[in-house]
Length: 210
Image (cartoon, rainbow, N blue to C red):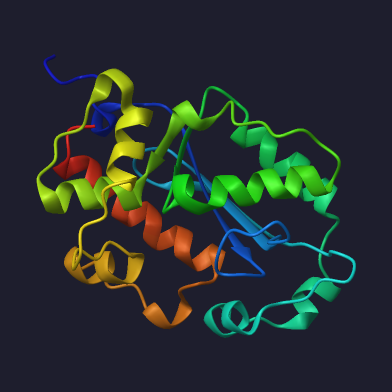
């Protein structure tokens, strides 16, 4: 069938992930306090995973705390970061999964590397070629840019390096654009963001030939 290689027809399982962090930008000490991921097929969520991480001496910036409605008890009662990383990477590093998320290439993948380095591990970007960044796909959709499937990762980085003034592609905006109807008061919590992110992903792969 013509077009059978498109994501809308793919039977590969998907892991969507999101990290909430102590700062709003990438810095050397910007560690995640929440790691959430969901495992899906192209129709539904198959499993949900949500962890808070217990880092010694963890401090939140005021900006990130306000956005995420941070509670210190989340970290105080959190799980061992090494245990969570191992569980998370059992999906992330599995080549049988596609990886989906919002602004992964611009933020989350670098936080993941800081997490690894803090635990004494080397950086590992080997999974990047399997990433579908819904923030970038949404920008391309709004601009009418066609994906380059011969080097999809490079094309996504090209889209990322070409922001367009006035074109909004955050999850709250896409929630409105696609009339998904998720309660936005719950956003900026990684677990809640993923439910909306999956709905956005399903909309985008029906609109963009990726």
